[in-house]
Image 1: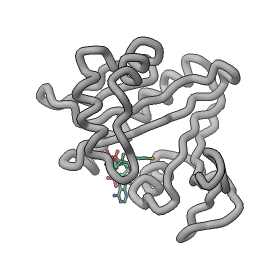
Image 2 (image 1 turned 90 degrees about the vertical axis):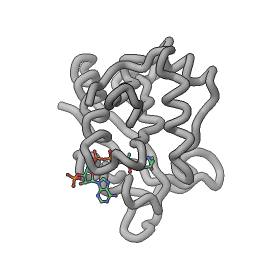
Image 3 (image 1 turned 90 degrees about the horizontal axis):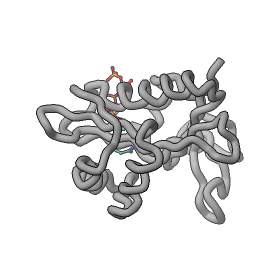
Length: 158
Ligand SMILES: CC(C)(COP(=O)(O)OP(=O)(O)OC[C@H]1O[C@@H](n2cnc3c(N)ncnc32)[C@H](O)[C@@H]1OP(=O)(O)O)[C@@H](O)C(=O)NCCC(=O)NCCS
């Protein structure tokens, strides 16, 4: 497996990969991926096996609080799951965060996305305390706006 930064030769393949992510991940538009490649490539690693895009992660460092990196989407091709793809992608972002002396990496997931919950927990993310729990997962009410409750996971860096 090769990990490379998102670039404009990969954006169509990344979009197609994200299209396989329903119901938890939805592909964004080609111009969104152009922007990620143009502005955020160093926090948008792509996993490639035999020229096939098998995983991608889209993250960005906050301009308002540069000590934070937000992970927007993580997706592994269904046939390549449980092979360490997400772990490898997250590790790229961790390394970048350390280089930039960021203090926090965080992401959200749908409370019922158990595979995601287990992945974030196994990779060292904490489930941020919320107002209620779904099957033991802490959920913050209206985190992404009215009615958009989310489980939030974060990792603090030394
Ligand atoms: C969540 C997702 C990104 C995980 O990707 P992955 O490449 O399979 O994850 P990894 O192989 O790196 O797994 C790392 C660890 O997480 C845990 N884990 C991952 N998937 C799991 C599952 N389905 N059940 C239980 N534990 C799981 C395991 O501890 C695993 O280590 P192990 O395989 O050595 O036991 C993948 O399932 C996916 O793309 N899902 C659909 C899109 C999605 O929900 N994205 C997240 C949105 S927030």
